[in-house]
Length: 522
Image 1 (cartoon, rainbow, N blue to C red):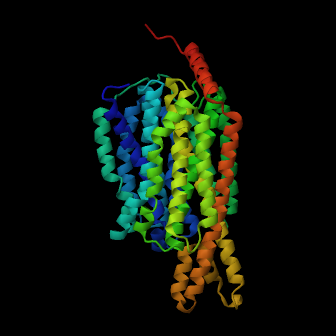
Image 2 (cartoon, helix red, strand yellow; image 1 turned 30 degrees about the vertical axis):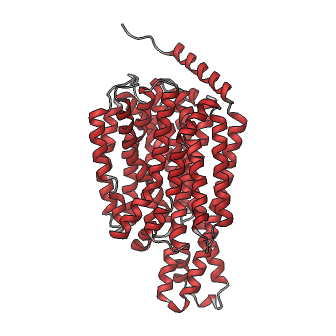
């Protein structure tokens, strides 16, 4: 444990908070951004997922870079670069500039975010102290991510849509100063060279995968989506071959095969990805369907954040007392209950108690799952590979967020367009509706709003159809979320050991790693 451990931990949490807030602040502003740029639902999906995309694509590579060149150096560089990327997003003059700013902001976070957990792993010895530190890091980080919409909602009530991206700028300045002053340098870093070719392949693989999913529902975008899918598959094959042959692989496939590692990674990808997809759709649901203003929509997620923080300590104790497997399964149960509430009770006339109940259940799910998912990764790798473990832990959130948010966003887009097409077909005289109007109606909810303004005599019918269309797309997404959580629960139930088995595996991993570690030079 480092000197002034409490200050160091809160410094690392503050650095991570910059990335956590950036992951979520765009969600509450999507409706306003859609109106400002007349953006399609597909473009809004890319704006929402852009930060996760940049972070997910870079986090493995940059985690290894930090292991070799210095974690504190990368921490400071990423925190500093987050400031100009946030300003560019706030001042973006087109939706594509905004998307690029979000992606580059994610890459900056890829420098700093994995380093925070790597330093916790390097500075705290394995045991209750490290578990408690990870629990605070996970719960507070997730809670801040959930509270991002609250700050964004208040800003949108008083300023323009771009102001939501500036909320992290003062926090970045504070985080940089604290990290410069309190974070130790050169802790258990490795002299082994970085696998740069593997790093480039990992970035291409993840970026192509996420972009391919997002381009799939765009008109005339299927060909590009297929091409990106091919690129992702080829890059994945080359990445695996490279990792098998490299003297110092970026991603140790032998470590990744360890049961505690890969089950925790799969579970974390689904859990955190589903959380981000839920927040993405939920913010639009509250504004588009329920008519909440931006501040009320942001405030509505507070129960989720409170639930996450409330069970953080309990989750850490459960990991130590009953094991990660049981703790994860409890979290999955909460997730499933939350999705059931969304699927059954969320509608045009939904009262807030149903919204709050769903968010509390999802928050409990993340609170219970976050600690064991991160702890299992860090406990199953040697300290010299802390960057790989922390990068994979971050990849859980970011790849999960990027992929799951993309998948749920695509289902929302397709479900919305299908429902709106059905409503148009049932209109009294569908042939009288121009192709341009049809395209605008099917593009997004904000597009339907614009048409309702142009044709006030049909405004009520258009708005009603748009709300029903959004609900259909959202329900498709919630159903997919249930399937994903059931898959994670099944994998955990069948492949993750109980408490005693988990402890035996950790001891076995540590013994193996100690035997394989190079002898210290004299």
